[in-house]
Amino acid sequence: MAARAPGGRGEGGPRPVLLFDGECGLCQACVRFLVRIDEGRRLRFAPLQSAPAQAYLRAQGLPVRDFDSLVFVPDWDRPAPGAYRLRTDGALAACAAAGGVGRELANLRALPAWLRDALYRAVGRARFALFGPARPERWSAADRARFLGP
Image 1 (cartoon, rainbow, N blue to C red):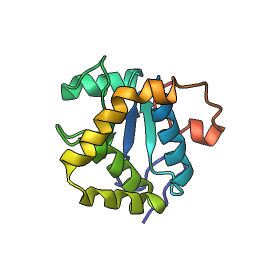
Image 2: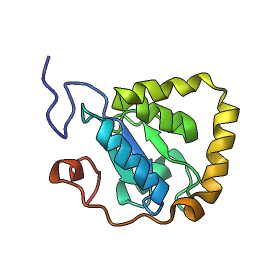
Image 3: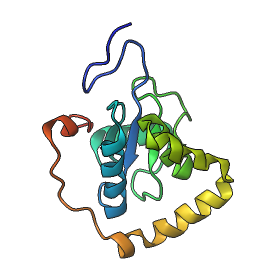
Image 4: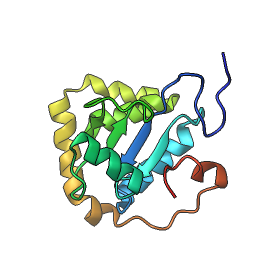
């Protein structure tokens, strides 16, 4: 079995990507958390406003302007129609993909989706008031390589 190259993907393995609102401070904090816990460096990221994310959203028939949800793509290289996950399903899938403590957080899937998503929407409506806008981030070169696009 081939080893996973840093910033790459193992032989035939999926390449999960989390699309997030690049203007949201809460979303930015979540990405920082996922980068920190993803010891296998499997997850990739892209702001919803970026060209790669916009192309994916258009291809999937998802909103390209009003971002009320993050989008988890299980395999960026094989984008099956409807395979994406939104809201808490997406956040928890990203946690599971990160592994470690993320796998433990993913156990929140045991809660009913209607309850998780109601809380997600409530926080989403107040996210800018509570967390403010995203701030310039100083990623290491290795972490910067995990982001799609320029």
